[in-house]
Image 1 (tube, rainbow, N blue to C red):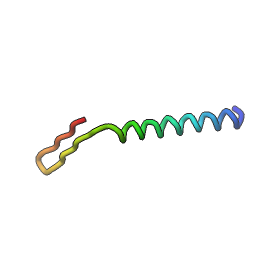
Image 2: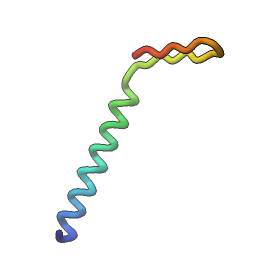
Image 3: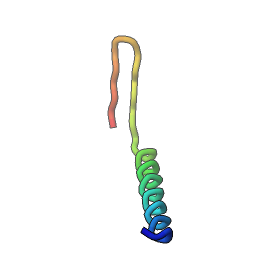
Image 4: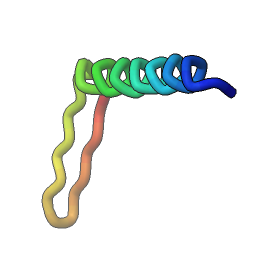
Length: 42
């Protein structure tokens, strides 16, 4: 594998990870966590 292909692969992985993190941050999520009661809703 030559360095050019490795660089392209690393960039694609980075874009995928950043895209997932952005998608996850845009999800509305409600979390209530108090002793004896826990509620999670998306």
